[in-house]
Length: 172
View (cartoon, rainbow, N blue to C red):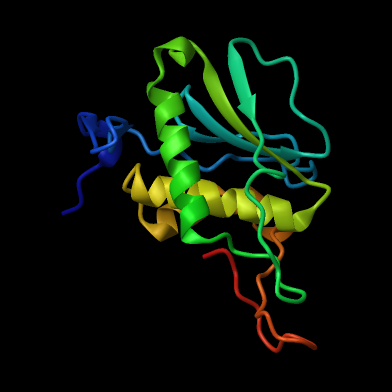
């Protein structure tokens, strides 16, 4: 018999962040409407991931951050990611610190990625997924499911060799 994690009492993990009591839920979107600009709720009323062609606006009590130009992949050829473990660690450490910071206690935190560059969008989702797995203790499948409305927009990773890539490597 499986426990319903939504009814479990919240617990703190080693980073001091709440987990298990709520792991977010996939965003539902009208199939005729573009998902771009629709936030994915990661931690209820606290942490969101969003992608659009321009930064979000008109959110009350919100803090937005963007890593598109700060955490970047150094390609060998036509490859563009995923980002390395040092970047995953830096992102996870800083986001966990931000979520614990008393100065942002009343703010909702949004990780914004540009939708104009598909490689930046998928690498941003990769980082948030890694945060969800390592800090929030989600499974890879749970983390990936959160981004379901965006799946069709995620560019497939490829190997670093020259020439055509003979396979597609998804975010999962």
